[in-house]
Image (cartoon, rainbow, N blue to C red; front, side):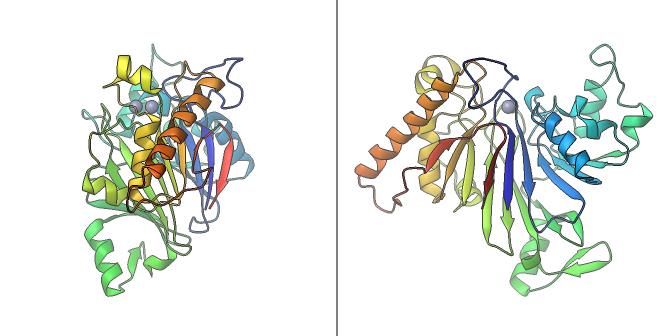
Length: 329
Ligand SMILES: [Zn+2]
Ligand SMILES: [Zn+2]
């Protein structure tokens, strides 16, 4: 499993001489795995970080691109409008995402890509002909499953559970495959103003787990369902947009989190590593480092507090992700 963080900023892309270490792209993540079919690519969100990634995908001659969206806020969609793959008919695009206020992926991009907001209409043949949409309407009862030969398909969670408990095969198109050969992507709603999906990637052949929890605000308690969804991730990536002081004084209710909360959650679910993302556009490199420090201090307080049952993570347990960072699990 290889994860490339092409954009780690939130809200709006920034160019700031005091922010060169972390970069200024908005959310986009490429997920690579032996479970993906040859010639395909899997991407989470298409913020401004998607623009450079799309150029790479074309160079790699990817022909089957799947983009799974967490939600439709601008910082997660704006890269799609100007990405090379959006206009390159040799790349079949499949856009997966939630439905909110009656807006699924097709309606979102038909709205964004039209006059007077954008010069090229979505219905232009060069755009519309190679892009299809799949609404994820029942995130609690559906799972996405990917097999290197079978491709990507949406199953009901009960079908997956039956296959797992009875050792039954999953049917993809005309073939059947064992779950153990697949990448299983589970979904759960986050705590954000819009209907936002947290994706959990379970690479069954290796047993590795990656969870991407962006655009999620501090919750007073950790709901049992969320605890299960995040459980024992090898890498848990969480939204951590604000310093504690900013959150307490101004931004509570905006749909984003703080480092103490992220550390608390990561410890509670037994995550092996915590990566912080969705950096605030007003944050400099120093501000982001200060946010990590808030997380480290909270971690030290929790460990030295001797709370029972809590693992003792290493020094690099919590870090802030930066644009173009690649992590292999
Ligand atoms: Zn966002
Ligand atoms: Zn958002």
